[in-house]
Length: 422
Image 1 (cartoon, rainbow, N blue to C red):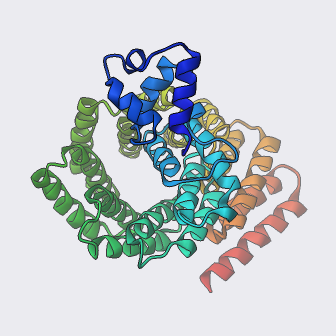
Image 2 (cartoon, helix red, strand yellow):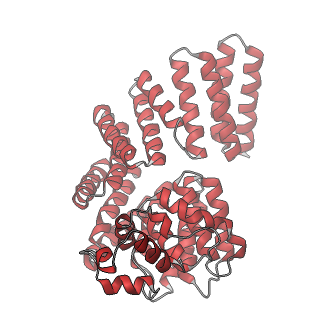
Image 3 (cartoon, rainbow, N blue to C red):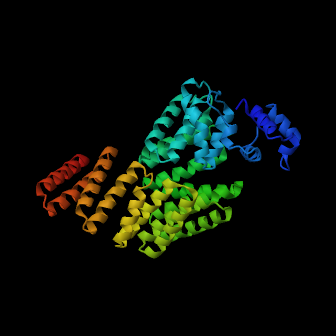
């Protein structure tokens, strides 16, 4: 970003604009002069205004191939990722990825940003590799906050892979680093503690999760972090939901939805709607669940949030399966598989696809889906799930004229269960 000012000056002159004309109502001519001489750095919002006024795409003013990678480049990439502007962040980070070996400073941060981008695209395995490299590269004593950020994102990656003990371990490391630093980012701490509650729920440690979430809720009210209330209510609702306390969960979800609507955060609203749909489905309220899923899917689609959309479709398919609506279940699970599901969710979706085809008497398609699910669960090391699918496939083949193949799959299921028990 060393040439940003020169670029702005060159394009301004090519456009025949004075510094006053470029400044417009938003800036002063003095600010434009300082910017062109490299004395100030614009915010992302300011740069967007100037880029539109100069009729250039935002990335034109960012890093070009051959320029040194500096902190300003990574700052902008961070802001774009936080704003979920993944395409622009990807454009900015592309030359960073090619220059990792030459980076002396900021290497760990660059790896974290690249890993975060992969994670948002659903490329969980690739993201994990980059984030582990970031954790190894960060000088913890010199930059404990960057180390905390890396472990926080690593925890999210582990959660996506259903490695919940590992996820909790990374969150605990992040919290330890944050608690030992007097100037730690309060929002990052709150996010880390919120994710800790979620992972504790995954591990069925509900009382711990509820205790932490209630404490965080009170802290958010007293420290002025009002926006975080919506997220905390969402998390507390999830804890109640996993603990089987449906009424409390629905109350938390309703409050969270109201706050996200007030703040205009439709993407987070869609996340709460998805969890509401899951809960209503498990309560047997299938019509309400389907309406919540449909609204969530529409919001995710409008936002281009393809990972979240695919996961919402998968949950909607499960709900339709529970309701016995096999045609809808089949349609939704196929839509989910068309999206960027993580490996664990993809294997789960393939198993559900097999069940749907079997219900519709599409036995060959069912067998293919079960084989794909078995391969997925095996690669993940999930022996109980692999055994369950092997049993389903074995019974299917036995009942459809392939008894030898069926017995072979049933033997695999027995072997897997035996090793799981050991």
